[in-house]
Length: 143
Image 1 (tube, rainbow, N blue to C red):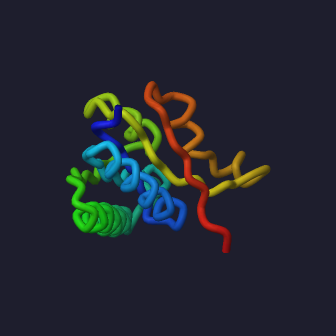
Image 2 (image 1 turned 90 degrees about the vertical axis):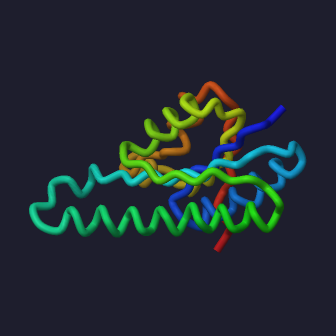
């Protein structure tokens, strides 16, 4: 049923919570997981100085985040493909789903509500609304 499972990550506690669920499902279905970090530099494109430094820092953060998923997958005996890409987060996730023929997406949600959700948007919500494959959302752990 599930051969390829995508785990989009931003390295947050919500994304971390999704990893456990994705690995568990991958184990049950002998699936490969794909770890994806999207460097969304749009918010930093207006910086006159330092934009390149910020982008490099985000790419480094992305490499760490996908490596972490790779290590967890390896410990569970699961194959893992790791990717760090640049673009708009939800669009890049959707493109990855299509380009790699994903069967399932498992991703964290921050659980924002009200004005925070309106102002900050929700990558997870956009993926859920536009994905042609099932999306399992995992809420960040209570603090």
